[in-house]
Length: 553
Image (cartoon, rainbow, N blue to C red; front, side, top):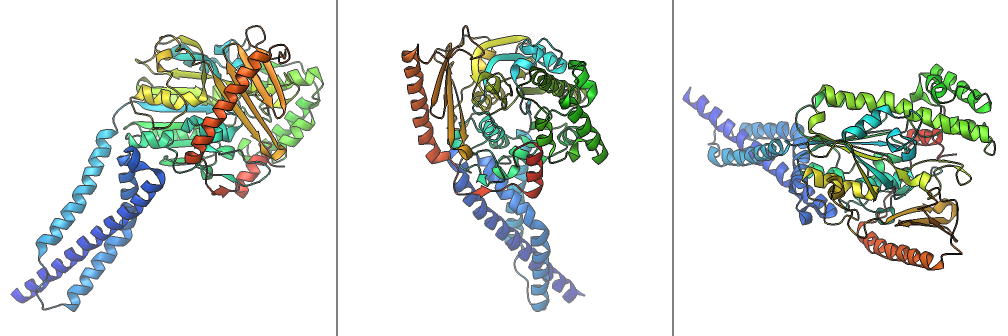
């Protein structure tokens, strides 16, 4: 009897020793891998120790389902082979197990303590120009929900995107780096494109290091996770964005979070149910309406908007006579209908769920867009230039108890400024290198600092061999379209219709020099934060979606 008990104790010692050594080995291996990731992403250099720990424990936890059975089996095998011999001392094995468990527990406790604080929700409505919203002075009823949000928060009146294209603009929003620095360009014609450098610290990474759960629900397409948009997010999902968002909020009422929400509902082609169309134009009868009705019928037959036909973009625009004033006006009203549809079916339910769950009072909500849209103001549709209708976007921030409800900020701002602004409001330090600035002094009612009204935008139209750049400073707007320069005085020409380049050469030279200085700064930073050799093509599914949005022929 005593001999059997001794054998049993010896066997357990072998098992405990094997388990301790196995877990310690997994921990050491995870630490080595995490340290390599830290070196590539610079976590250690900037003090992002939670991100380093998270990388370690993700690998450690992922290996446990394999490591524990293997260790137990190895211990049992050793015990069987050494049957009759005295087992190893139990103390060192228990101490090692306690060390591993203690480290894991300490990390979990730190994560729990850091999970308290205000939430952040950023809502980006793709292709939404500011001047089509009631809060920005538009006369038609496109945005009642957004208008209420603006009344409850602060509205920044003059905000410019740094690119008229979805991919570079959103990457700037999430990194506070100009497109010419981060280098993540648009997917076009199924060509491969660059991936964000791991050396860039995104808003999601910064907040994750500060203890936030980070999640993104997007429309996919040009904000595909494969381009580096998922960097720092615990979860980054494509498609069915509203449904997934509401389910996620229901399940995550505890602990602070950063939720990024994006949708293409306003993007062309503007095919929306007729109840919204007739709200803005009940009189037009023509080819564009006929095409919208046919597309709606076909898409309903396929199961709704998730089953969009891939040639919808081509068919929609083929029906538009772009020199016909009636068609131009109706297309603009279709765009208005899309805004109202988004306002009712996306923004209202999302904000309503925050209210219903009791989260709104402790959540910073940021509403914005990546770029606007043109309706022949300068001779064409879409978002392929650097005029105000294409670059001016909304920016509304609601933070109960922190920001004064109903305040309007008249100064000029940029999407580049969103990341440092929200970090400032949340009390989280920004990364060492951001090109934007915090707008918090403005939002709190302090005066505009001198020299803070410059907004630079760019558009690398590489497939056409052209580069567009613009700078707005004070009352002047200077736009370069390849070899063509334009100068406008916004004080009496906000629509940028009267080119003053020939009559104001001194002003043009000053803004030309400002662009040259900006480009030199960007080139210096691009050497550190620009994309490497990693490129990626859109998947078959993503290519189908891009075709429906008009990016792939």
